[in-house]
Amino acid sequence: MKFRRQKHIPEPPRRRAVSDSPAVFSYYARGSSNSRQNTGRNDEGVPTSKKGRRLVRLRHIPSYIALLIITVAVLRALTLQANPKIVLINQAGTIYRPTADYQKAVSGIWQQSLFNKTKLTVHSQDIQSETKAEFSELSDVHIELPLLGIRPTVVLMPAQPVMQFISANGVFYVDGSGKVLARASDVTQNQLPNIPVVHDETGLPAELGKAVIPESEAIFLKKLGLQLKAENINVESVTLPQSAANEADVRVAGQKYYLKFFILSDPRQAVGSYLAIKSKLDAEHIIPAEYIDLRVDEKVFYK
Image (cartoon, rainbow, N blue to C red; front, side):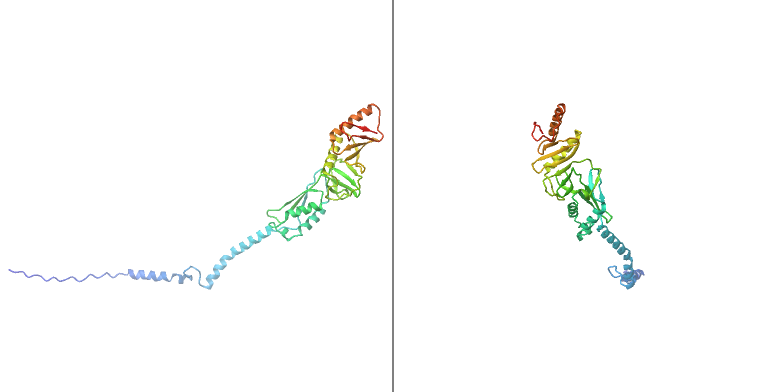
């Protein structure tokens, strides 16, 4: 018995299921591509509409204003007034002028240069030098610039004279180096001690800010005055005679005679020699009529 072979009928190919998801994907894709058009910005995120650009500029205005204020504040902090504050260090034993005189002169010096109007360009050294040159009674000039303010401060330190010097052209104060500080009539004394009064008979005029006697001579006269004061010897005057070089004649209060000192000698030793001879003369009831000469070491002459 023969069986018939069944004919193979091929199955139809499967079809891909139809879904709504591609449509959803396409929808978002289209929405994403048009998002910058919806926000009014280009590919770089910069607003494309006039209104958007205006809003961006308005948002930056506070920053611009703050930057402008900071710039103005910095520029103002760097400027300087040409009317500095004067601080006078008034110590005992010094000489000085009225503060108004210093104020007027320093302000004039400050205004001579435009560079002195800012903290970065001010010529402090020049101002100090010119101030000391105009006022020789000042030993030091210091300029202080404010950190935040605009008015500078000028600190003035007056010098201490060691003698009053009477020359052919007036009465002056002289410091320890022999330099003329000021005319006595132009300054005020601040608790100035009894300094020696030196009469110069050489006839040479004294000039402000310049040496009227050598420094070695000024040092000797200063030490001599201190030594005489330490021995309670009252001095009426000290004279630099025209006829003798390196000699200082000291007039002792209450005595008819004067003392001759050698300027290059040791003041302490010379005063000691005077005390010794005075004690001897007093014991012998001898009073010199004219002078006691102490110019030679370990030898004393009198007349």
